[in-house]
Amino acid sequence: MTFDVTVQPSGRQFTCEEGETVLTAAIRAGIGLPYGCKNGACGSCKGKLLDGMVTHRAHQEKALSVAEEEKGLTLFCCATPQSDIVIEAREVAGIGEIPIKKLPTRVAKIDKVTDDVAILSLQLPANERLQYKAGQYIEFLLKDGKRRSYSMANAPHLDEHLTLHIRHMRGGIFTDHVFNTMKERDILRFEGPLGTFFLREDSEKPMVLLASGTGFAPIKAIVEQAIHNRTKRPMVLYWGGRRPKDLYMQTLCEEWVRTLPNFKFVPVISNAEPEDCWTGRAGFVHQAVMQDLPDMSGYQVYACGTPVMVDSAKRDFVAQCRLPEEEFYADAFTSEADGADAVLTVK
Image (cartoon, rainbow, N blue to C red; front, side, top):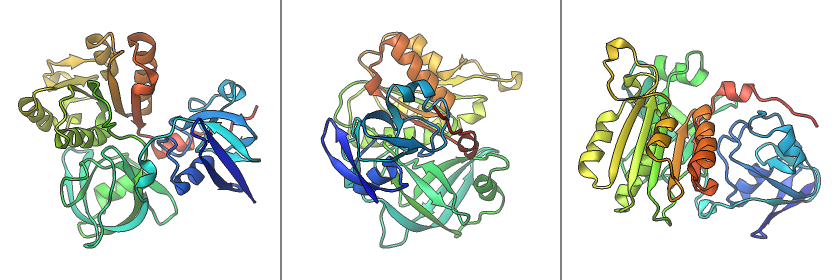
């Protein structure tokens, strides 16, 4: 059995198999619904159900609350149609034009830049090239059927390799493997590109780039793409970490400041120790943005990092700094634990 899905206001249609989520069917059909984690944790794919019925798989309450569901909102990554449906969503242009592939890749280099961050360089087969937009991610296909998502840290035109920034989550199946047993020349498989977090090149608005930890990876790719485009748009990067060592590519950011006329960099540390001798900005990184830019009505924001940082930034920038909600683009890094915390909400 299949169900028809109609997207408003565009009027585009696609079919959804029984038991298939709306988002999975949309990706397969090349329809650019916004999304991030695909596992009910980030809320990026939230939209409105205008007509028909869906049931929801397990998801986090913060991604879609019971009150929101009662108002007709739905989470497309967890919603399976029970009839033909009509949904309202802001489609993302250009995503359907890029093919999603499953590819093998060889580990070319593992560079452990800190005790808990590794830069992984991947080499594709000689006859393959991955087309993607700066900011998107890939999913590693693990032997147990599980997947792990990591953003490309280089713009598409740079490097012969794909580079990923991986933080060690102790006890995590994949990151323990990266830090303890993975070797150069190992073969991995992945699917990509995925995600709707990428540089919007049709805007001239100044950009706020907001990162926490390894959320810097897709932000780095976006900056490199902007440089490649020879953009004249002002860019200010706020990168937050608990300790100074968490800003593992600060030297690169300082080089951008020296070489790019419209680029500024503000490092922010939340838990500096006396031995760090930190004299820069302190506190939560999104609050540093608000202190510097109390009126963000003319800005565009790209945020990537922990869900709590991304959620707080969106809420506060829109409510207190007049940022238009549609100009906040985000990718929240959700872990296996975030997915495990998902619950099935029943009305």
